[in-house]
Length: 385
Image 1 (cartoon, rainbow, N blue to C red):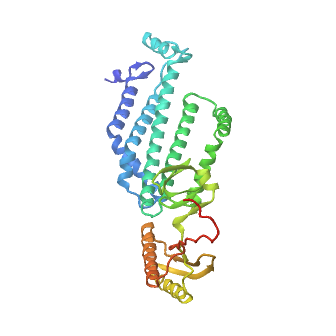
Image 2: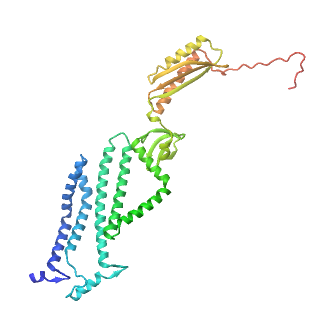
């Protein structure tokens, strides 16, 4: 038995092959338990940064990619510990000679050995990047859950934005690692080329980059948030979505308007939701037949009407005397009501003012017109009809 275990085959003893297979088989069978253990260690580190994390959800999300990464890593390390025949070695058997010839077979300028090494490195890096992406996804879920507890919806979109941003950065880092460790490219030259290409793309996509920068300004400066009623460039509506390039607004006409973020930042924006009061107006043109006493009663009566529970302040006065009317103006301010509530308050006030004018028998200027037919002057001929 010992003679069989010490038998050399392809530069390694049978015992060495069995040990490598045993290690790989052990990791394959117990990778779930081992990965759960390492996931618990990673969770302890992450929980020091973010408290109140759900350990079960974290382990459930991370354990599978972590187990695959450990299996690939241990397999590569174990196989790398074996000694395989190399070119130039003497005393090889025919099988070893054929194996060496196969490994050094040229395929599109690369040997089979180099291709196998490259594939193994790519698989290892991809499994590692997949593990990082799972961790980023878990952290974003925790932050989204915390953001949903706040009334401000901007932080919800901010979490989604940075989640996608860090996933892209992680993917780019993984791509550069593959170029460096699998294909042995000079990363500095690649980065230099990417910077030149990036500068050209930046010039071509200048407007898109301006909108992207404007989205950062909106996220951090917060001139408006989701659900706010805003007015910008003659467009009035509620903000339904803040994207990386544009903002979507549902207008008061129920249309869906897309406004570039640059215009949302550079233009004069009126956030109607942040108003502390709503203004209502009355513009009355009373006929010239009204007496001073009636006008005084009208002004005092409007003042009493505006002593409404929703009205916080009001100003009523006969502001001017025109050639064909007495002008009575009233300005009042209510608390920040909803649009429907504000319309209801205005209707109630307007109806009470009309009822007061009926009681005082006052008419609006131009409400009645006298038509007089002048008799022809004597001596002038009657015009034919």
